Structures are given as structure tokens and as C-alpha cells.
Length: 193
Image 1 (tube, rainbow, N blue to C red):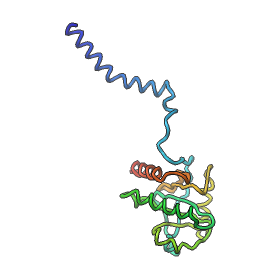
Image 2: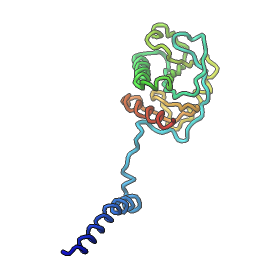
Image 3: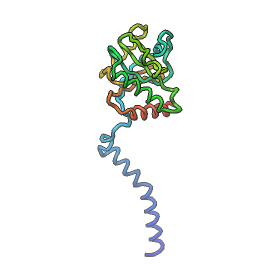
């Protein structure tokens, strides 16, 4: 093999190294069902379209006489129907741990419990400091509850995520691993800047 043929083969090899990946990816995108087999990276169910809920005036579990407005933060929401039973205690614990697991981003996330009844939280208040509650005695209760009820697949056993602009955007089934919610929130905070 002479020198000229050898240099041409090297040149053709270099060209193929650069253009084969482009041609292969073009084929995958336009002529295969590769995209259809891809799964999404979020662990919850995207609420489509997002539901506006706006600012929420709520109280803290440890002092329900003083109302605070929730806005400008990611907010994890769950519901209690009649009383705070073992399931309620488990959810209180989970949302607290999810928030704490966010480390440096802990201040960007709030927790909200929506209760259909006015309950006595005194026995739990010290364990869940900072936990926000919204019950049926508060002025925003009906508006917020109606916003959640307008979700096509609303389920009061699920967790929900409200974005900092006041839109309900994600639903998490109650059997989800907390790590999945943590990953989603970390990704959302990172991408929101």
C-alpha cells in the first residue's frame, strides 16, 4: 500500500468518526421508535394542565392562631380527612424528611397539610415544627380544595407539588418512594435557577 492510499484511508476514517454518530442519531430520531420507548425522568405524574392555586394563607402546626402566606416556594401538599391516624403520621414524617433531605435547598420548600376538619395538633406540634396546616375554618380552604378537586385524577391519598408561582404541577401516589420526590424537587430547583 503506497503512502497516498494510506493517507486517503486515514482521512476517510476520520470523516467517518465524526459523521457516523450524527447519521446514526438522525436515523434513531426520524426512522425508528426509539423515542417511544424512552421513559420520562420524573417520578410523579405531571398535572396537565397545571392548576392555579395562588397564594395560600395557612397556620403553623405549633401555633395555629397566627396565619402565614405560602408563596414563592415549592410546596409539598397532602390531605387528612377525619383524624390524624397512622397514615397521617407517616405522611407528616415523610414530608419532613423529604424537606430535610434537600440540604442547602431546605428553605426553598414548604410543607402543607390540608385537613377537612379542625383538629387538635398539640401532641404532634413539637415533632413537626414549621409544618403548615390549612383546615376548613380558614378562609382559603374552599378555594384551595376546589383547585385540587379540579385535577382530572385527583386522589386525596396522593402527595402534590405546588411550584413557587402557585400552580399545582405534580402528583405523587402515596406508595412512592420518597427518594423519587427528592430527586424531582432537586431537579426542579436546579433548573429553576
